Amino acid sequence: MLSVAIDGPAGSGKSTVARTLAGELGLRYLDTGAMYRALTWQALERGLDLRDERALVILLGELRFALVCGSCLTLNGEPLSEEIRSPHVNQEVSRVAEFSSVRKLMVAKQQEIATGGGIVMEGRDIGTEVMPDAPIKIFLDADHEERARRRLIELQARGHTAPLTDVARQIQERDNKDSTRLASPLRKAADAVTIDCTLLSPDQVVQAIIKIVAQQANASL
Ligand code: DC
Image 1 (cartoon, rainbow, N blue to C red):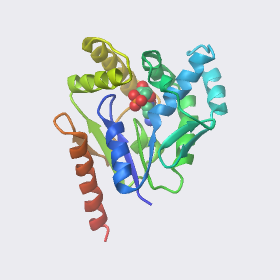
Image 2 (image 1 turned 180 degrees about the vertical axis):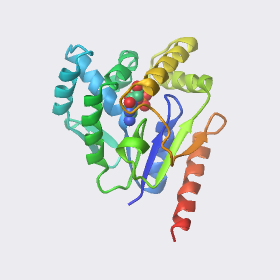
Image 3 (image 1 turned 90 degrees about the horizontal axis):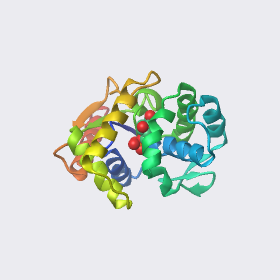
Image 4 (image 1 turned 45 degrees about the horizontal axis):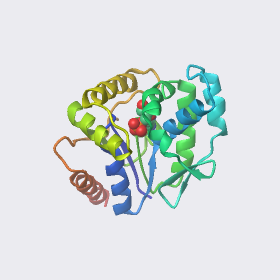
């Protein structure tokens, strides 16, 4: 079964593209960022010290993630709370995602979900760590300003608001943390195709990926 890995920085539009692509190709869909967010949210709820790597790994060990109906990610049997997208979680999640033992366990959980293929997975290390053998790898990028604008629209749709300059600064900080951390930093896999989607609609990006999937399928005939 086909597996598609989509990586890229915050606000590049990965989620919309990956979800739509999965729908069009009849594949499952997993947003791996939601799993790091869920861990961060749970750690905050329980008052854990977010610098305590060991406590975070123990907590993660207690979290059971599953994909229901192909695209609904559940945590311990319940759909994920909208709280995982709150400004507080936004602010703290990259420091949680920085710990190598947290990543190791998270990647194992993601690989378990990916077993059998037939999935579109999006994140930062899918093409490099989680599904290094995926036949289709996409690196989605967009201008920093455009990504901030998209992230603000996303926040507003969830009832939060912030000045665009703050969102841009937060995105910049998160990009820096995500791409400079020691444990599997955000980077393009050597065999990934880069799509710059600054001037493209999500649907145009989806169609571009479907074309790549078709080309690959023809090439392997
Ligand atoms: O894609 P997102 O903004 O929801 O991701 C939330 C955070 O999780 C972000 O700081 C990057 C991190 N992340 C990661 O390190 N590896 C992944 N595969 C997915 C997300």
